[in-house]
Length: 108
Image (cartoon, rainbow, N blue to C red; front, side, top):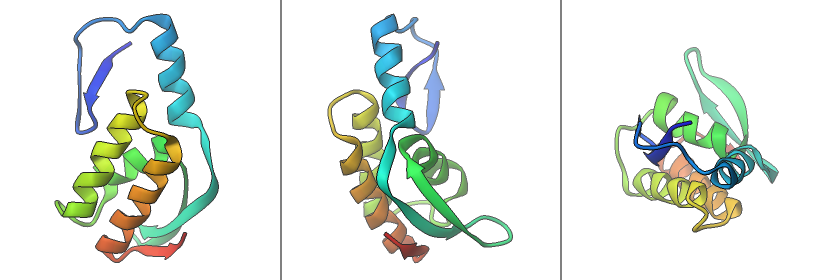
């Protein structure tokens, strides 16, 4: 298992303790109460984002902006959730702000 310290890249450092692996898996797959609907992809399509894993993937791989304050904040918050320092709903709030900044938010 890789220890991920930055959402933009995974660096092999040391195996994660099994409890930490379980916590990371739980945080990544925990569904938000209400999905965030964004327009993303090629061709553009409405996409429901309902987990931290889906949000992180969208922010890193498919985001229409390379940079912006809300995008940067969302990446920091997602990383903090993975580290167990923030709650998943905080990542959702930051993701909504980043989607709004990018002009791709349909419904939150």
